[in-house]
Amino acid sequence: MTENLTSHDPRTGLPVGEVPVTPPEEVPAVVERSRKAFSEWKQLDHKERRAYLKRFKQTVLEQGEHIAEVVRSETGKPLSEAYSTDVVSGLTVMDYYIRNAEKLLQPRRGGSWPFVTTKGWTEYHPRGVAGVITPWNYPFFLAMIPTITALSAGCSVVLKPSEITPLTGQLFAELAEQAGLPPDLVQVIHGNGATGAALAESSVDVLAFTGSTEVGKLVAAEAAKRLTPVILELGGNDAMVVLDDADLKQTARAALWGGMINAGQACISVERLYVVDSIYDEFLLELDRVFDRVAVATEDEREIGPIIHPPQLAVIEAHVQDAVDKGARVVRGGKRAVTESGIYFEPTLLVDVDHSMTIVQEETFGPVIPVIRVSDGREALRLANDTRFGLHGSVWSEDRDRAKRFASQMKSGTVAVNDVAVNFIVPTVSFGGIGDSGSGSNFGEDGIRTTFCYPKSITAARLPRATSKLLGIWQPRRGMRYWKALARTLFRW
Ligand code: NAD
Image: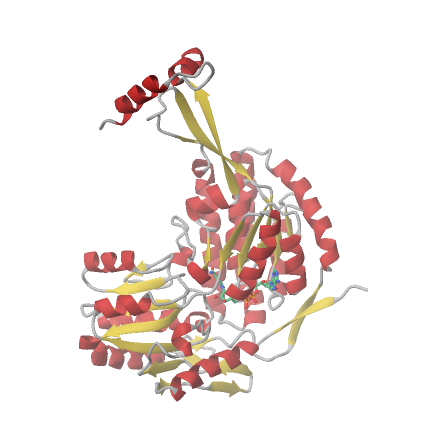
């Protein structure tokens, strides 16, 4: 008998729908069907693929509100937030690859120095079947990024959405079908970690994992057994640094948005806020003031959503409690808000925070902004970089050159200058972490060229007959006098 997976609305705890689980032992057959779809998809030229992907984009655009409603039904996030951060962000990445994939995948010529006898170029070929494993916080957008990048590269996709948000995953498959994508090009399998593990163990040609650091390590270990290339988009502990010449009003609004986005359940949300001493008091007044703009369960423009995965609530509480025990002060919120309609955590502002606290060391993944007072920019940089993560960060200063220099020194895969959490929707540059935040990128040039394609370099002799003589490697090999003269000629300068 087929087992079902039930999705719940976190606002009410009530079931909102169910999908059939894909038993782990069935995953290899799904991958084989995907391989057949790949063998046809890769034969299409860019124009043909683009026509399919345009229809896919059109379908997402037409069904945008419905997608946002499904996302809301199983994450509880406000409808306009679901529409902007899941649907519009998804469309942004689709549009980018539809416009640019052909150009990005053109062969690249290598230079001719010092091997003047040989010319070379690199071609980009699709790897094959892409296994995509995604989390629950942005169930549509985070599935769309690797899927559209993989399809644009010429790969087929097997998607394993989070068991917390399976309805959005199911909708993803339906949209692909409605758009008329070839059968089995995008297949969705459902289940918990066991189904995900079966995909990681399968014969997929590349794995794109987005989720926690702990599970990312398991997936990487599994992938290593087959040497399957794997890209890991993992947790973050992102620092926001406010320098003494920042626009305090604007920066306070940004901190609020960056900390409360998706009720803090975003890998690129503000997890640590460093403010230099000389403007600390003034900035804190601004920040405290803007907190009036957010509230839980209000159903108006102040609304921030619930804690999507209930066990996360205990993690947030433990981090706040640890901070308070070690001397932090709660200025706003600080506790769960058990409303009639579900489980929320109050928008929280913590001050007198220091680096011994778990809230600074670990990803809290909740609507909490811990503020750390620092003497100057140098101390801010040292502390911001004192982390095992490295996904995103931001720096705020009216002196743009100073801010850019600061950004370059931050230990992180992505940084925003006078902006926050924006890199995730800028597909023209790569997005990825370092350290415990992962490696590789689904985005931009890197995502399509080296994650979902393999680079094949080809060389061709310019003057085939002369080459072997000039090079002098072939038998009869030239002697030391020749090689020394050649080295002196080539590398004298
Ligand atoms: P998770 O790691 O618990 O689960 C992610 C996915 O992995 C789910 O689909 C799950 O079923 C699957 N899975 C679980 N065990 C598995 C196994 N052994 N093998 C293969 N797959 C397995 O993460 P989550 O709780 O769903 O998501 C929250 C985390 O995701 C946070 O840490 C957040 O920072 C991170 N995240 C990172 C990014 C990024 O781009 N870097 C984006 C969003 C979320």
